[in-house]
Image (cartoon, rainbow, N blue to C red; front, side):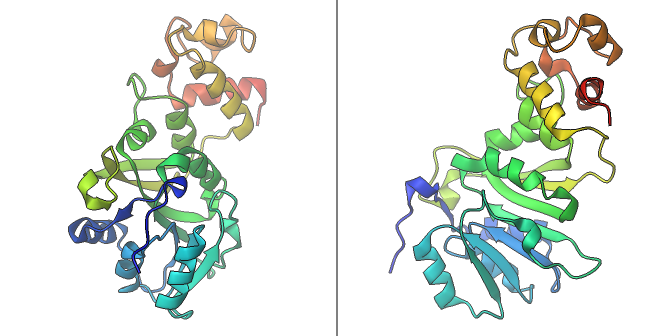
Length: 258
């Protein structure tokens, strides 16, 4: 029986075999990897990965798709976690000593940003992440300072990950086709994260980009003096998108040293 994609779950099922092969090649699974897929849907990517993997985990919210997965895969192949990835404890997945978790998925575009921030809290337990996302979101994730797409998402995720846009996927690769291009992003947790209190950095970055057309001095008025902004290595007449990650970290450390 054909499963009808549900808009409330942001379902767009990838069916293009060429794209699926390219994604599997980019992930490059090894048989003993501890892999978890978010939103396996109709299991097109799952099947490709299981040609190499001995076993994998999946997190699926749609109960109809959970039932389909239970029917189509043996428990020895697939551990199914029925629930919301936004609330799922990825740290609870058992990982052998010396290994880290590998996370993949065609992420629902309607929850992509909050899901990425949720996953960032598990970054120290992760080897890498490969996700299909809206191309515009990936461009924001990997944007450099000075770019129009550089913003809060760029700073907060670049604090935790090295990220690369691998390739673009057209709408016709999906059923139903989305109205936008998609892209595959590789996310590898940084080896040496800049020391900083994450909540403080988030507060500074959110305040800075809340009025991105203003200069940084005005955006952060009430939070920092101009002298403090200069002490962090920032030209107070620059706009928020001109300020790099290390400088935002320096500001956060003025508020709450680590």
